Amino acid sequence: MSEMPDALTVSPLLDSREVAAYLKVSESTLSRWRSAGTGPPFIKLGGIARYRLNAIDTWLRGLEPEHAAHG
Image 1 (tube, rainbow, N blue to C red):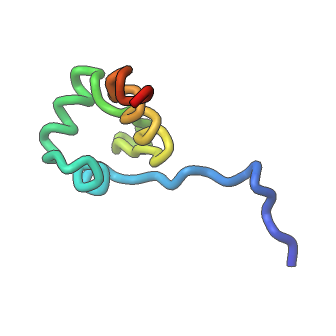
Image 2 (cartoon, rainbow, N blue to C red):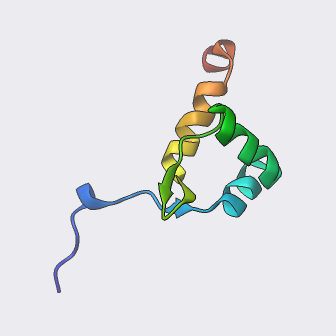
């Protein structure tokens, strides 16, 4: 049996409920962020928003104040 190379490892897709729980916000807040274009990046699959876990973590790092990176 052959193993898949690491280069093909893909971040899991999460739905809005899972992301809201991960970020500890309501689903309506997440929906507002999507509409305003201020929340984590998402993709639409069949009209349903899905989020990559690594994209959410990258988005969160971008929100950290500059002094936190140096502290």
